[in-house]
Amino acid sequence: MTQVQNGASPAPAVHDSALRGWLGVGAVTGATFTVVTSEMLPVGLLTPISGTLRVSEGAAGLSLTATGLVAALSAPLITAALGRTDRRLVLGVLLAVLMFGNLGAAWSPNFGVMLGARVLVGIGIGGVWAIAASMAARLVPEKSVGPATALVYSGVAVASVIGVPAGTYIGALAGWRVAFVVAAGLASVVLIAIAALLPRLAVAQVVPLRDVLRLARRPQLRTALLVVAFLVTGHFAAYTYIRPLLEKVTGIGASTIGTLLLVYGIAGVLGNFGMGAVGVRGPRRTLITIGLPLAVTVLLIPALGGSLWLAVVLMVVWGLSYGGVSVTTQNWAFAAAPDAREAASALNAGVFNGAIALGALVGGRTADWFGVISAMWLGGVLVLVAMAIAAVGRSPELRR
Image (cartoon, rainbow, N blue to C red; front, side):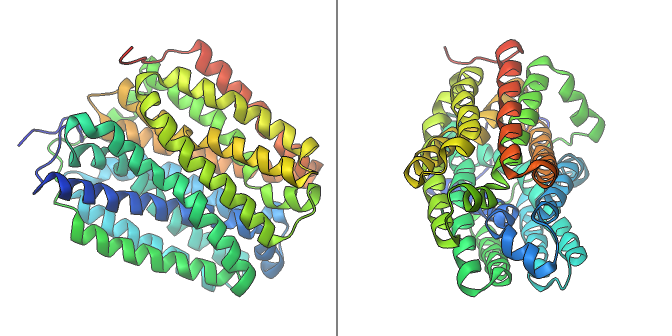
């Protein structure tokens, strides 16, 4: 059996067949879909959550902030603490934690309980993101690592297509609490799939926490982490508050907003697969290519979103652009630390989720203080800063 270096390797683990390996990748994709759906549910439910729990929309956005912050802290810590534990078992436990977190959110009688439940969700998210991409790289042959990684990260985009809009629709039809119960049920189904389809995935070499953190000193990886920090913070400063913005600027209701989020998500799936292969060859070029339209779209939507059709066009461009971010930044992290893929993935996941938390926080404060439109402007500016860092920083440009 091929030995795994520093917790992960592009070499495949032992598996019965190529089909079984891809079925395992599919199960891991189900896990990423579930964690992103769970994390993003408040985006489409902010208005009813804030009304039921009697907090402002900006305060309700803290349910996303708390989740992202805990996920950011737990990703590198869980990776270091896992040791050689079978990653199949770990993934199953994390999905169980996610399930209980969603059930707690559905039951929450007040906002304090909601935040506590979202902490559990954050632990599940951080752990899954820390190990999911490197697991995919071990389930398939080396030549298939790129497509397998893109498939795993398609869970992010598909969650935008199905998960978040479905949560918005369910919230409109049956109440926001039912949306969280459905998310808990989804986690239980994926847990069963993980147990049935994944082989045992032991780790040959453990990476201590101090070594995980030292990876950030590598210039190419440090650039990637800075780009993720600014780009994702900017995106979520704006995207977390897209529902109140569309209600204010476009003047549409919950069902139409759900449709727009569906359009956004479909575009995101196309962006994920379209940029997956390109991002392997040139992560810097790919991020700049998708980041500039993303910044322009976020800046324009307050001015042009008054027209429903222009709002649709802008959401499509936004989805296409952001859909490629996750897989491209993960490929950048892998290329910057090919000898420590799981550790690099954990760092990337930590910064990514921390940026989600920070984006929801600063976007919420900005929306409460200056109005929801200002959150869009802030988001666009932060994405432009990320593009400047990507342009001047160190980057591994592969397979020219």
